[in-house]
Length: 263
Ligand SMILES: Cc1cc2nc3c(=O)[nH]c(=O)nc-3n(C[C@H](O)[C@H](O)[C@H](O)COP(=O)(O)OP(=O)(O)OC[C@H]3O[C@@H](n4cnc5c(N)ncnc54)[C@H](O)[C@@H]3O)c2cc1C
Image 1 (tube, rainbow, N blue to C red):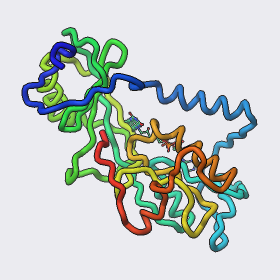
Image 2 (image 1 turned 120 degrees about the horizontal axis):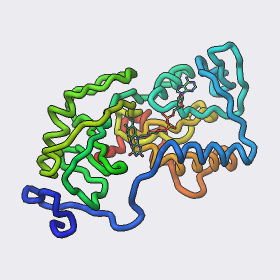
Image 3 (image 1 turned 90 degrees about the horizontal axis):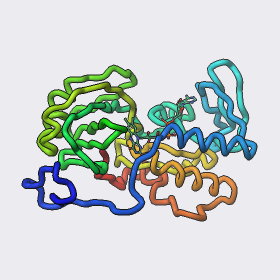
């Protein structure tokens, strides 16, 4: 480990894991645009609008109403509202424990050579990876730390000075001398029951589907979640991957399928 990553401090680590194949990072926005372009090319129509109500007739979702007054009738309604998924579920009279939780990304450069760095996650949960010639890093609050609901985009730079930077400088001593270039905020769609996705139909309102609660790892799961729901809608079952363990039933039963490795 030390030979491969001479810039890494390992004397206080008992073990580590390194993925040698099929690992990496990608441009999330570019992936989203690629999916949109492909979908359009095969006839999918996108409509922009804010959903303010989900119409229901007992155990059937009938469609949605938009803020501009339009109504859209639908055979299926898929909740894919990210950090606002709890709100959209509530519009259908359904409960979903998905909350908007703010996360910061800090962008910094370092003059010393830190070469060949993979995405590196410290035992504290602080992560870092190269971003062009510089680096980005951040963290999620640990169990028990304050993590209020938030939709604002202001960045609290004291989290960098007080925690992220010292933690990174401990793990990678070259990071003692860095320069913060920029920072931004986004929102995890945290499933407060178990930090895992909620995928598939509501057990009573069977044509209202969830694609929610990915808790900060939805990008890597989006292609599978999308395919699964498409299969469910088209055939009434999952064909490629069985998503039932991630179904809403565990939410109703309050039986968590806990994801521990959320960064
Ligand atoms: C800082 C940060 C770092 C991340 N890093 C990673 C990572 O490394 N790997 C990973 O896998 N994931 C990562 N994620 C998580 C990932 O971005 C999300 O899990 C993913 O974007 C969820 O996709 P989604 O389509 O479900 O929701 P979103 O991408 O949040 O999209 C939801 C959409 O619904 C729309 N919407 C909401 N409410 C309404 C309404 N009422 N009417 C109409 N439209 C509405 C929104 O405008 C938005 O377009 C990160 C997230 C953040 C914030």
